[in-house]
Amino acid sequence: MAKLTGALMSMGARGQIGKALTVSRWRGIAYAKSYSVPSNPRTQKQQSTRTTFSTLSAVWKGAPEILRAPWNEFARNRSFLPRNAIIGQNIRAMRGEADMSDFVGSPSALGGAALLGVTATPGDGSITVEPEAPDPDTGWTIKRAVAVAIPNGNPSEPLKGPIRSGSADADPWEFEIDGLENDQEYVVSAWLEWERPDGKTAFGASVNANATPTA
Image 1 (cartoon, rainbow, N blue to C red):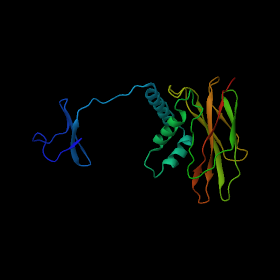
Image 2: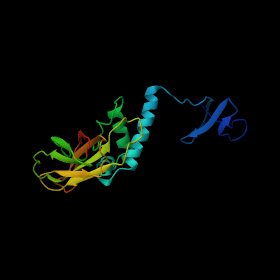
Image 3: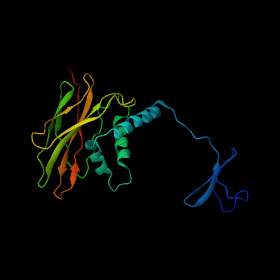
Image 4: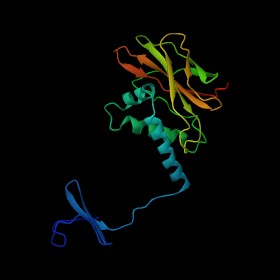
């Protein structure tokens, strides 16, 4: 790249000049570089990442507020958007995987503790979710246990249906997610919403289980 200190061809230039030069500006400094054809990598790994990105974009677009809330808090006052955070973390989690079992429903935001485990019991068009909550630290309170059910499938293929959610705001932390399709496997991603000693809402990291509703 060449930095320009005087007029190029006696005029202010910008953009492509034939097939020889590309002229532009960066932070107020004009520069010129040799023209090159932009690459468009199409290796199997790169193509898989692109299609997974598209699937995760659809997840965020159809995400209920329960799913958006921890990512909104995770990205607050940081240099990335909630959408970028959920896509980035899940591309890393599911790269090379055949399905979405490792889906990250919630990052740990503001220090919330994770569930000890979760059981997902299938029913007719529904899944009963039984989270196992830890004992709260002094000053911390569990506000509610929440979960989303995402149709399982290859992450590099289109999402197979809508995302459903459910929650419970009292112990025992058991609830039902309904409106599900029978004979379709779902990834149930569950986590806790906490109230911190300072009154702020924190979110625990998600814990997953798979279940397939049947009639």
